[in-house]
Length: 286
Ligand SMILES: [Zn+2]
Ligand SMILES: [Zn+2]
Image 1: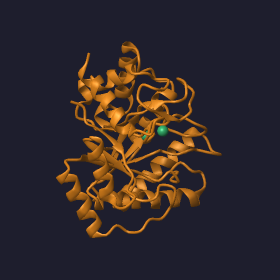
Image 2: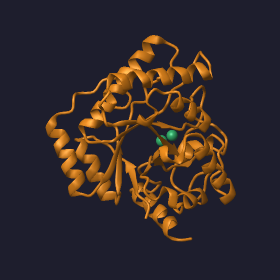
Image 3: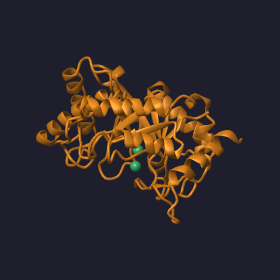
């Protein structure tokens, strides 16, 4: 069976995310380890980390993952912002490590006023410096594919490949694939041949062994729109087939998948419960 979960809020404590995940029927959980729209966060206490870990094991919520701040831009041509982003990313990794979280998902960055290859180069340099600064840290960076809005990098699998293959320590980096972003970037996932073709492209570029997580979201915006708006599973432009293909693909049976969809439906119901039920149904019926 698929490993399914959702992003949950840490309001009230890290363990609250675990409790919410268990309540919704998740197997796994994604969190922010601090306010995602701020640079700074209060240090995590040993007590907080202990409570988070024991809640996870008591409630059998596995594969915790964290998502880095949206402010981070490791591709920035501005030295000051790139430096700030590197420092913030290093702290994200250390915070995750403190909580026993093995991976931190980050959007690779936007080249803004420079160009694609300069941006990719800046990302490589940033990650090399972070790795050099934290030589023994077990928590790893997962670069997420993006929808390709504006100057966002990482919407083409080849770009992710270029970011990783030029690193001094490429084995310290993995990838998180977001279904909504892939669809918005123009990767076919719905019809079976198109799906296989997309997965083959992934394998030929980043390599399937580098995929450590999926973000499992439908899209409010059309195929190839390069716009990033998440929708409930089966209620957006993607429909159900992409999720059926993915959930029935034995190559990804052991890879955790996290919903990042709206928390309530139009009637105010807990939408995670509904989306998880939809996904589990697709996983088990041909
Ligand atoms: Zn995502
Ligand atoms: Zn998104």
